[in-house]
Image (tube, rainbow, N blue to C red; front, side, top):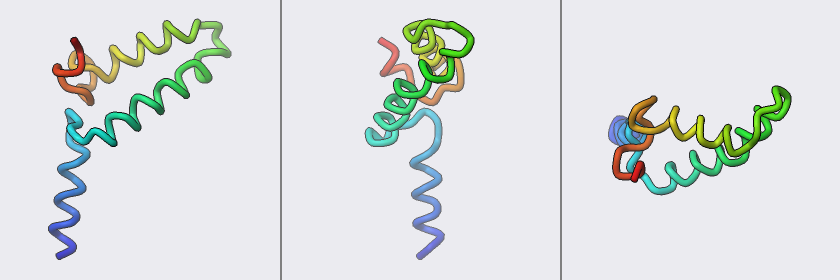
Length: 70
């Protein structure tokens, strides 16, 4: 029983993410943290969001698939 649950959890976190809750959580996390992390080095918040989108997108870490890039 626990192996089945564990396999389901591993599948939920495979890249690219398909679970809408995980996608929303990741985007919210990036929206909240990227401006805070880049403020000390004087990078505007919008530039941080663009860089974060490039990193998590299909040409970076591929956490969000190509269906979210257009």
